Image 1 (tube, rainbow, N blue to C red):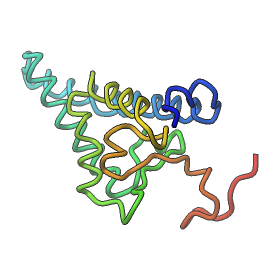
Image 2 (image 1 turned 120 degrees about the vertical axis):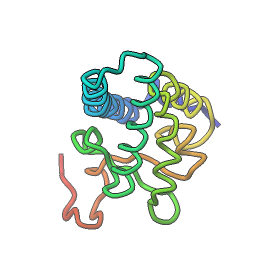
Image 3 (image 1 turned 180 degrees about the vertical axis):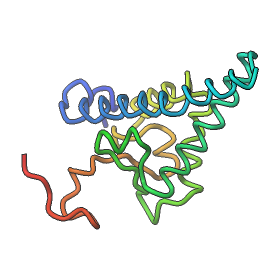
Length: 154
C-alpha cells in the first residue's frame, strides 16, 4: 500500500484538499490568535510562555466548539470544508480530541499531518483524525448532503 505522500505527489484533488485545509488553518489562526494576544497584551500580560499557553487553550476551545456545533470553523466554512465523523455522529468529545494537537498550534499540527501522510489509509486524514475516526471533506463534493440540496456542477 502507498503512503499519503506518494498519493499527494500525483493527485491534484489531494493537493487542492490540503491547500484548502492549510488556508483554513491560517484563517483560524488569525481569527483566534490576534484577538487573544491583543486582549492579553492590553491586560498587561507580557510573558511569552503565558501567551502561548493561553492562545493554545483558546484555539483548542474554538476549534472543538465550532466543529462539534457546526462541523466547521470559520476557516473551514470559507473554504467549503466540513469535519465529519467516519462512524457515528460528530460529538464534542471527537471534536476536542481532533483539536488537541492545536494546543501547540505552532508545531503539533504539522507533525500530525506528516504522521498522517506517512501512514497507510485515507490521505485526507491527519494522524489524529485517523485515530479518532474523523475526516475533513469538501462540502461541495458531497452530493445530496443533508440540507445542502443539489450538488454543484463544475
